[in-house]
Image (cartoon, rainbow, N blue to C red; front, side, top):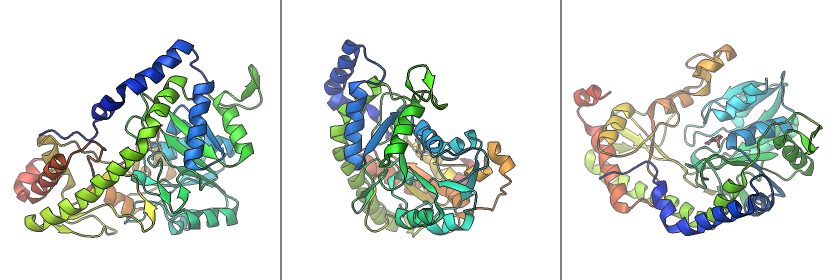
Length: 395
Ligand SMILES: *Cc1c(COP(=O)(O)O)cnc(C)c1O
């Protein structure tokens, strides 16, 4: 059996004619930049997230970058980000000449908490970027309270978290601004790159719109220096056509996650593997942990990430068994070569370092079948119970 990490072909087949019709309409209009298709998608997303303004962007990365630019972040400023995320979260800070101030993450959720922020915040901190990793909201209320008391802007990196929520609060509607990505592997994926920034602040929305078009409201009259951060009309058309299906896709991701939980519970006992709560340090051999949902959150499972002993051997075994899997993320920011001048040492953020060494994302996409999930579970447990000598030989 083959189980890819993500099967976009399976998603496309049933919606093919709807999506192609939306693309055709844009082609017939020959209106590829800005215009009603982009505006219609922005309105739909603003309503869905529950914010006043949604501004289409060329990528999630550019949504974060434009958000930081709108907040006036630049040289001399500090921006707090978790050390464990996709590179863009800290890369955007660096590109503006500001300093990424890194923080460790909670062992249960791998998200930033207010305590982690409080431990590293400085008088120069201008913004905080909590990441809703794998599709689960970071605990925002205390972070927002700390930010308010310090006069600091909060940009939610909601790139993996469209529709994620805590109670009535949706990802991207809690911070000063939110950043979404429509990279094809995200829960709502385009046919290429795309992104979106959200805010309830009229002035910031105005500034985001200005920034995405080189800082000019009137062509060739530049009020500020921006960039070309626009969302293509073709991408907006594809995304808007896919949008009505997102609820169903997300609930299938969630039921797949629930099914993994009982399949693992059942099979691990038989295989002699211990399922434990994630700890501060590396997961020992013979032990694995499953994703932890904070009470009251609606996790959208962009990724289903388990942590396990002898991860690299298990990964090799899965690959050999035809199961797609990936490490998100093998190197925390503080150990990235490009950030060496920030001066962080190995050992600085033990939780992130442990997660980098023992986490593994398994297939969770909506079209996954129970038979495929059973195959994945069996392959993971077989990989974990290989004799050490065999396992080491596969490293
Ligand atoms: C995907 C992602 C981004 C960047 O989005 P792009 O659209 O690929 O630029 C940023 N942060 C996180 C956490 C992401 O997962």
